[in-house]
Length: 280
Image (cartoon, rainbow, N blue to C red):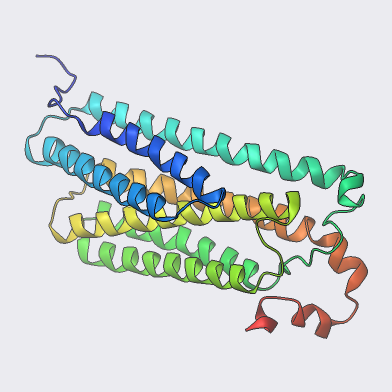
């Protein structure tokens, strides 16, 4: 008997590929002032494909016993490659931000941030979000430890606590966008800032979706004390999200806004007023 699993014929991979392409196209059209309804339709269609594909994977692996140890290794390798590809995606935006930050041209006023941009103070909501994500990194490890110890109740408690921290981060990010004194159309500063932080926020949203999915599986008693690929993939993905914010905070908020806060703010009260805390 072959050590590799025999997968059932499925149309979900090809449907998901076309849906992701449609989602990106609708996003570009939205940026060019087209209707947002096509983007939301594509997003819901992609969500449907994801749910159907994951449901099929759970059916094959947990209920039909079609996945062997070789399959588990290949799924882990696939998750690692996915995370590496996402890291390269973020690296391109980090490179763009650093390129203009280290050598701002005449069209930027030879300064970073450019003239007329009031950056968000790093010790406001951005620092709170840093603490929140670092705490969530610990709580999700506690949840995984209780799962391996055969204590699903406490695993669920810590996983729900991690999900709550993720919701707290997401809400704080939306509040930060609401109070920001610049927008996506404010030149290279606005575009790189919102692409980096917005893309990270989208990954946080996906991570919360994975947590909700694993919570449902936990309540349905579909996990055991050994290796659970679904839970491990969520764990790795969330640590990746935490690591990206650990890079974003010092690069975008601290270093990116240093020129403005160093030369324009002199008193602690001015720093407080211009931070996210003072805007609430």
